[in-house]
Image (cartoon, rainbow, N blue to C red):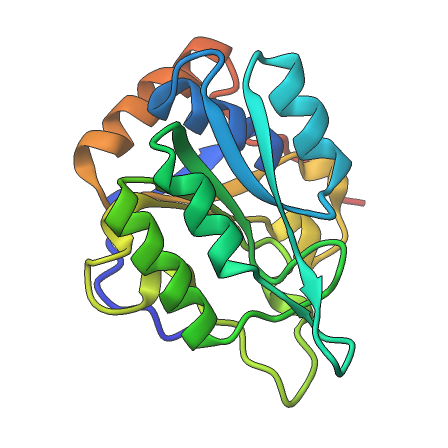
Length: 200
Protein backbone atom coordinates (compact mmCIF):
# COMPACT_ATOMS: atom_id res chain seq x y z
CA UNK A 1 0.00 0.00 0.00
CA UNK A 2 2.88 2.36 -0.64
CA UNK A 3 4.22 2.43 2.93
CA UNK A 4 7.97 3.04 3.12
CA UNK A 5 10.38 2.60 6.01
CA UNK A 6 8.64 -0.52 7.35
CA UNK A 7 11.12 -2.83 9.11
CA UNK A 8 10.72 -6.47 10.19
CA UNK A 9 10.87 -5.51 13.86
CA UNK A 10 7.84 -3.24 13.37
CA UNK A 11 5.64 -6.26 12.62
CA UNK A 12 4.03 -8.19 15.45
CA UNK A 13 1.27 -10.67 16.20
CA UNK A 14 -1.96 -10.45 18.14
CA UNK A 15 -4.84 -12.85 18.65
CA UNK A 16 -7.24 -10.86 16.49
CA UNK A 17 -7.90 -7.14 16.09
CA UNK A 18 -10.07 -6.91 19.22
CA UNK A 19 -7.26 -8.43 21.25
CA UNK A 20 -4.95 -5.87 19.66
CA UNK A 21 -7.26 -3.02 20.65
CA UNK A 22 -7.36 -4.13 24.28
CA UNK A 23 -3.60 -4.67 24.43
CA UNK A 24 -3.10 -1.20 22.94
CA UNK A 25 -5.52 0.35 25.45
CA UNK A 26 -3.83 -1.38 28.38
CA UNK A 27 -0.50 0.07 27.24
CA UNK A 28 -1.60 3.54 26.14
CA UNK A 29 -4.42 4.29 28.60
CA UNK A 30 -5.64 3.71 32.13
CA UNK A 31 -8.93 2.07 33.08
CA UNK A 32 -11.73 4.60 32.85
CA UNK A 33 -9.99 6.72 30.21
CA UNK A 34 -11.99 8.11 27.31
CA UNK A 35 -11.61 6.45 23.92
CA UNK A 36 -12.99 8.25 20.87
CA UNK A 37 -14.47 6.39 17.92
CA UNK A 38 -16.95 7.05 15.16
CA UNK A 39 -20.52 5.87 15.29
CA UNK A 40 -22.12 3.79 13.98
CA UNK A 41 -19.63 1.44 15.59
CA UNK A 42 -18.75 -2.22 15.17
CA UNK A 43 -20.30 -3.88 18.22
CA UNK A 44 -17.10 -5.82 18.92
CA UNK A 45 -15.35 -2.57 19.82
CA UNK A 46 -18.22 -1.46 22.02
CA UNK A 47 -18.28 -4.70 23.99
CA UNK A 48 -14.48 -4.97 24.27
CA UNK A 49 -14.04 -1.42 25.53
CA UNK A 50 -16.90 -1.54 28.02
CA UNK A 51 -15.97 -5.00 29.31
CA UNK A 52 -12.41 -3.81 29.98
CA UNK A 53 -13.34 -0.65 31.84
CA UNK A 54 -12.81 2.05 29.21
CA UNK A 55 -15.25 4.86 28.49
CA UNK A 56 -16.50 5.24 24.91
CA UNK A 57 -16.91 8.72 23.45
CA UNK A 58 -18.70 8.65 20.09
CA UNK A 59 -18.27 11.12 17.27
CA UNK A 60 -21.19 10.41 14.92
CA UNK A 61 -20.49 10.22 11.21
CA UNK A 62 -22.82 12.46 9.21
CA UNK A 63 -24.29 12.06 5.73
CA UNK A 64 -23.71 14.89 3.28
CA UNK A 65 -26.18 16.06 0.63
CA UNK A 66 -25.08 13.20 -1.63
CA UNK A 67 -25.63 10.53 1.00
CA UNK A 68 -21.89 10.07 1.64
CA UNK A 69 -20.81 9.45 5.23
CA UNK A 70 -18.32 12.06 6.48
CA UNK A 71 -16.28 12.64 9.63
CA UNK A 72 -17.51 15.53 11.74
CA UNK A 73 -14.17 17.23 12.37
CA UNK A 74 -15.65 19.99 14.51
CA UNK A 75 -17.26 17.43 16.81
CA UNK A 76 -14.05 15.39 16.96
CA UNK A 77 -11.95 18.43 17.80
CA UNK A 78 -14.35 19.55 20.50
CA UNK A 79 -14.10 16.16 22.18
CA UNK A 80 -10.31 15.93 21.80
CA UNK A 81 -9.87 19.49 23.06
CA UNK A 82 -11.42 18.50 26.37
CA UNK A 83 -8.07 16.87 27.13
CA UNK A 84 -9.75 13.70 28.31
CA UNK A 85 -9.47 11.59 25.15
CA UNK A 86 -6.37 9.38 25.21
CA UNK A 87 -6.89 7.22 22.12
CA UNK A 88 -8.82 7.31 18.86
CA UNK A 89 -9.92 4.08 17.20
CA UNK A 90 -9.92 4.59 13.45
CA UNK A 91 -11.66 2.01 11.26
CA UNK A 92 -10.09 2.40 7.82
CA UNK A 93 -11.97 1.52 5.60
CA UNK A 94 -14.93 2.01 7.89
CA UNK A 95 -17.11 -0.81 9.16
CA UNK A 96 -20.12 -0.70 9.01
CA UNK A 97 -20.69 2.28 6.67
CA UNK A 98 -18.13 1.16 4.08
CA UNK A 99 -16.36 4.50 3.57
CA UNK A 100 -12.87 4.37 2.10
CA UNK A 101 -11.33 7.46 3.69
CA UNK A 102 -9.56 9.91 1.41
CA UNK A 103 -6.04 11.12 2.13
CA UNK A 104 -7.17 14.64 3.00
CA UNK A 105 -9.65 13.24 5.53
CA UNK A 106 -7.01 11.11 7.21
CA UNK A 107 -4.55 14.01 7.22
CA UNK A 108 -7.07 16.27 8.91
CA UNK A 109 -7.77 13.56 11.49
CA UNK A 110 -4.03 13.03 12.00
CA UNK A 111 -3.45 16.73 12.56
CA UNK A 112 -6.11 16.77 15.28
CA UNK A 113 -4.52 13.79 17.01
CA UNK A 114 -1.06 15.36 16.87
CA UNK A 115 -2.42 18.70 18.13
CA UNK A 116 -4.18 17.18 21.13
CA UNK A 117 -1.76 14.34 21.92
CA UNK A 118 -4.22 11.58 21.03
CA UNK A 119 -2.83 8.20 20.00
CA UNK A 120 -4.39 6.21 17.14
CA UNK A 121 -5.32 2.55 16.84
CA UNK A 122 -6.01 2.06 13.13
CA UNK A 123 -8.07 -1.02 12.27
CA UNK A 124 -7.31 -1.64 8.60
CA UNK A 125 -8.51 -5.22 8.27
CA UNK A 126 -10.81 -4.36 5.36
CA UNK A 127 -7.98 -2.93 3.25
CA UNK A 128 -8.17 -5.76 0.72
CA UNK A 129 -11.90 -5.25 0.05
CA UNK A 130 -11.64 -1.86 -1.64
CA UNK A 131 -13.39 -1.73 -5.00
CA UNK A 132 -11.78 -0.36 -8.19
CA UNK A 133 -11.89 3.41 -8.30
CA UNK A 134 -11.08 3.75 -4.60
CA UNK A 135 -7.70 3.71 -2.86
CA UNK A 136 -6.94 2.52 0.63
CA UNK A 137 -4.55 4.94 2.39
CA UNK A 138 -2.59 3.59 5.35
CA UNK A 139 -2.88 6.05 8.23
CA UNK A 140 0.65 5.44 9.50
CA UNK A 141 2.09 5.58 5.98
CA UNK A 142 1.42 9.26 5.35
CA UNK A 143 3.76 12.21 5.79
CA UNK A 144 6.93 10.40 6.86
CA UNK A 145 7.02 9.64 10.58
CA UNK A 146 4.50 12.28 11.63
CA UNK A 147 1.56 9.91 12.09
CA UNK A 148 3.53 6.67 12.16
CA UNK A 149 4.93 7.44 15.59
CA UNK A 150 1.49 7.81 17.21
CA UNK A 151 -0.25 4.93 15.40
CA UNK A 152 -0.70 1.21 15.95
CA UNK A 153 -1.96 -0.42 12.75
CA UNK A 154 -3.84 -3.73 12.64
CA UNK A 155 -4.49 -5.87 9.56
CA UNK A 156 -5.69 -9.46 9.35
CA UNK A 157 -4.94 -12.19 6.81
CA UNK A 158 -7.84 -14.10 8.36
CA UNK A 159 -10.16 -11.37 7.08
CA UNK A 160 -8.53 -11.11 3.66
CA UNK A 161 -8.70 -14.85 3.00
CA UNK A 162 -11.92 -15.53 4.98
CA UNK A 163 -10.18 -17.87 7.41
CA UNK A 164 -11.46 -16.69 10.77
CA UNK A 165 -10.09 -19.85 12.39
CA UNK A 166 -6.57 -18.44 12.12
CA UNK A 167 -7.41 -16.02 14.94
CA UNK A 168 -4.57 -13.73 13.98
CA UNK A 169 -3.94 -10.07 13.37
CA UNK A 170 -0.80 -8.36 12.12
CA UNK A 171 0.20 -5.43 14.29
CA UNK A 172 2.52 -2.73 12.93
CA UNK A 173 4.21 -0.41 15.45
CA UNK A 174 7.14 1.77 14.39
CA UNK A 175 7.48 3.63 17.70
CA UNK A 176 10.03 1.53 19.60
CA UNK A 177 8.92 2.51 23.11
CA UNK A 178 5.28 1.84 22.28
CA UNK A 179 6.14 -1.44 20.54
CA UNK A 180 8.12 -2.80 23.50
CA UNK A 181 5.30 -1.94 25.88
CA UNK A 182 2.78 -3.60 23.55
CA UNK A 183 4.85 -6.79 23.31
CA UNK A 184 5.13 -6.96 27.11
CA UNK A 185 1.36 -6.63 27.33
CA UNK A 186 0.55 -9.42 24.86
CA UNK A 187 3.13 -11.68 26.51
CA UNK A 188 0.93 -11.56 29.63
CA UNK A 189 -1.98 -13.12 27.73
CA UNK A 190 -0.19 -16.31 26.73
CA UNK A 191 -1.15 -15.86 23.06
CA UNK A 192 2.39 -16.34 21.83
CA UNK A 193 1.87 -18.55 18.79
CA UNK A 194 -0.20 -18.46 15.62
CA UNK A 195 -3.04 -20.96 15.39
CA UNK A 196 -2.08 -23.30 12.56
CA UNK A 197 -4.84 -24.93 10.57
CA UNK A 198 -4.11 -28.52 9.56
CA UNK A 199 -3.69 -29.05 5.79
CA UNK A 200 -5.94 -31.52 3.97
